[in-house]
Image (cartoon, rainbow, N blue to C red; front, top):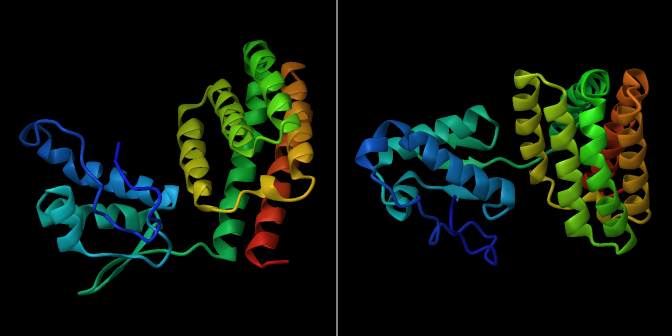
Length: 238
């Protein structure tokens, strides 16, 4: 985990740090460690879109050689988080309307599949977990606690993807859910969205616990499509 000054979103790397450990024994995994730190900084908003990442500077701040930093940049480029510029370094990529649409298309289909599988194979398990989670979601909605509601919504989708019982599906959904953290303005801040979101999650939970795969898939798809519509409107300042 990285340590960072979240009050400085301009992209300073001064307080980023690798975990304390035996570096020599983990040399082979160093690029992944560096990529993990930078990825979290990008997803959390510490490193803003269009921020420059200079290889030498990142290496100095993280107290590693330039080789793992260079490899980390390649990992992040493959994930679409940075753009490598020859002889300049890496730039944090900006989110575009196309990114919203492309992420939405993939996530909608995968969330639909996860909901269908969860309702088919693990609706009893979900019923027990939702019995604890849904009251918390309703309470956070009533209190208009956006931060808490956002975290509970995330937990909701983790329950669904885990209940689907497909490791590959769970891994892909985890990556997509991580990627959506780059949408810095949450849709929950829009008028009426809190109530709408609570209702969508309650209805989806009900369909899954009833063991209705078709209804669960439909509601999951509608929920993701609504999110996509709102995010695009926000991006275009509509």
